[in-house]
Amino acid sequence: MKANKNIFNFIGFDSNYDDSKLVLFGAPFDGTTSFRPGTRFAPNIIRNDSYGLETYSPYINTDLEDYKLFDYGDLDFPFGNTKRVLEMIYNLSDELYKDDKIPFMIGGEHLVSYGSIKAAYEKYHDELHIIHFDAHADLRDDYMGEKFSHATVLRRAWDLVGDNKIHQFGIRSGEKEEFIWSINHTNMTKFNLEGLNLVIEHLKDKKVYVTIDLDVLDPSIFSGTGTLEPGGISFNELIFAIEQLKKLNIIGADVVELSPHYDQSGTSTAVACKVIRELALSILN
Ligand SMILES: [Mn+2]
Image 1: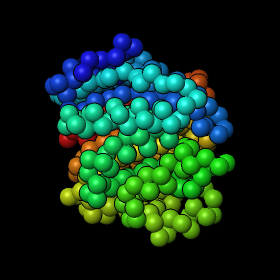
Image 2 (image 1 turned 180 degrees about the horizontal axis):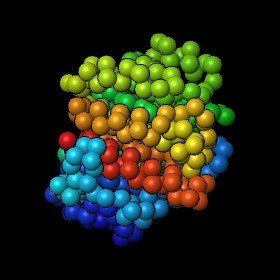
Image 3 (image 1 turned 45 degrees about the vertical axis):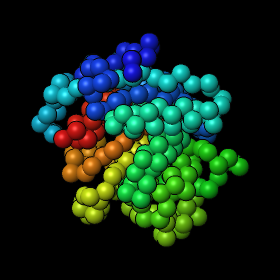
Image 4 (image 1 turned 90 degrees about the vertical axis):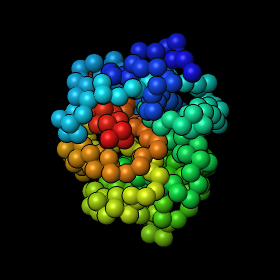
């Protein structure tokens, strides 16, 4: 596979496809965003601002340059056609799985995760667990009549993986019904990351897909997003949680919901870039 022509790679992701285990791609879609749109602009602004980062991580004590990493560029979506967008994400992730790669997707709104999780499920079936960091439960069965929405994405993932396979952290917003439903169907930690170490212990021999909605962070450090939810975790809490994930066999991941233009300081984009670097290194370590 060759890089798409719109390539301007994330820092350190400059190797070729064949040599690379981890493959980054952008899914610049915000078609079901209910409040403030703009996540479609995230992948390329992330790539641009990633050059403000070092490739070395003092947290994990490794360097992006120690690895072969490939940036595919962005999928070219037909905006307004949610079904087709999800198919395109599924098709690319499926191709990556067939080539024994690890898909690493940059959103976009959270619904994009569904396409990649579906491909992961079809490869790993019952072995697959999902670790989900988010302010929002995303467990509605439909949102304004739509089954496929940023507000339903983990419920649609549950349709695939079933009970007790989705481990949610930092959740502090949703309908009462979502919280009640979660009691019997997902493993939800409200407000913080308590118990992550126990989940990691429990999932050591499983295949794990990690989805990070950056709005799990407090808006005081991450205001560049569509649906702000005060009361979030700190940057260091998230980074040290990501470092813990290196104990797992992560077979796919995504980082979603940066909407860069709402934070003109660039802080939110810098946060996203650093989360992406740390998650990439955690997956590979
Ligand atoms: Mn969210």
